[in-house]
Image (cartoon, rainbow, N blue to C red; front, side):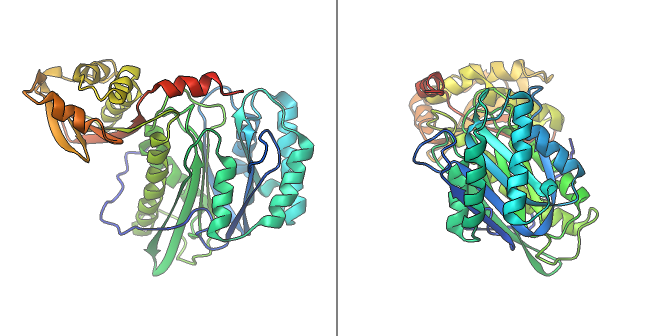
Length: 418
């Protein structure tokens, strides 16, 4: 984990776009009948120009076949041209047949696109324990190859194809100037349940035309993930399929980024914007959620402790339930700080709530403030809530993103396989 700070004075322009925003990238989404009927469930991302690839993957000991397959490709393949993803079936707990279908998928994509087999990455999301239907996967890959386009609509099709219990798409693109050249980064992600900060709790695909070495691309991912995707939580469950892939094909023609410096800092700022946007919107779209629950810890003694404290509050079922009930029960937030594993003085802690309705302080120096419960309830009734926690012990800070815990979360997951 890196303590490198993201520079905030770098101009990053957000544009309408997704994985096809960067030069040279195309995408497609088709209905292959993997598990669903009448909806898109396979996606492809393609770059004719070879791309270097970086990746981050689940820390769960139980790793799905596509995770193990991609870890090998990212580590050992000189370049990547394509990513093939299916939704509905996770291809996890599938043994050797699961690995075999990954290899067959790569072979089918290689034949359809005239690229090397070891330049194909794969991804899956859905129910654990079921085998993927080889005939439908192969047919889907052929259909995807024929449908590839660099349009915004094609990117949207790809995003819809990887969604499971998601209720809204998560897509974003940005542009920055590096060495006098416009560099674009576009990304999409999916994730609504089985989300907890432990790298990486979702599927995310980021495409850029930046000219950057594989080593520096991986360094950028290593630096940024701890402060973005590792700071989200919905239900405390780290998935078997969590995958973050970052592809760079160099078509922006900026001077190559092969070491740290101003150009790397600019690229990192742009990547951070993309990663944070996707991560934040995944937390907001948590299964059954009615509100984004943001926890901002400031004035902590160390960065590590700031993260522990923020994640502990955002992950707490009782805190999440309080947000759902619009209940100013600050004792739950204080309690979650206390079991976070970070050492601090409870008598220095300040807590306030903020939203579009305003801000109200409820705890100062560890003691309850005189405040209006009605005003607090109004602030907590918005669809984006921020709990501000000042530790008054240092200068470190961190933000975690979660969501409230509603009745619908149980309903969705009780019927997940139905």
